[in-house]
Amino acid sequence: MNRWLKRGALVVLILVLGLGALVAAGLILGEQRAARRIDIKLAPVSLRGDAAAVERGRYLFGSRGCVDCHGSNGGGATLADDGKGLKLAGPNLTAGNPRIAGYQPVDWVRSIRHGVGADGRALRLRRGMQRRNAVQLGAGQQAGAGHREGAQRHRRARPARAAGRLR
Image 1: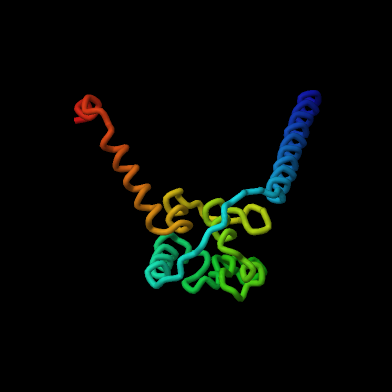
Image 2 (image 1 turned 135 degrees about the vertical axis):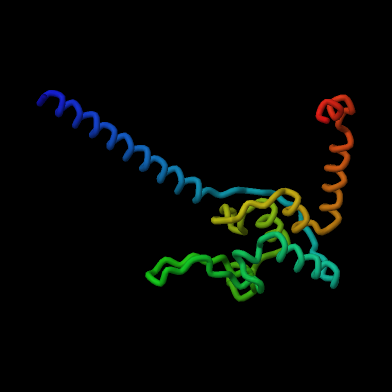
């Protein structure tokens, strides 16, 4: 009986040490990944400032879930606040944020399309965006229309034989 207890304790100890090693390795790898710099080369872009483009941007900001984290005015929304020190808030995207105040148009494209900040680090807690949404936000309505046309072409290209079997 004593021998089985020793063996059982040894197995539990090995499992706990193995689990601890896995957790430590995961934390180290996660920190390394968060600290990495991503170099994305982008061509210079110009932003349209006409009323139609501004209204389209306002529509996309509101309809694509940006408001959920950044607030309706872009000043950042509080996502969680337990009153005991845990506060999770979306970043302020207005010119009042010193990091954002220096953003150039290419920095916005890098952030929206690729999820990489102006400093080359991956943006944290970024909500996943579909490629179509990122293209529309980054390049305007024209790029989004091209994507929809491509999707319709793809649907029309389905062979009639395969469509007949699905009925």
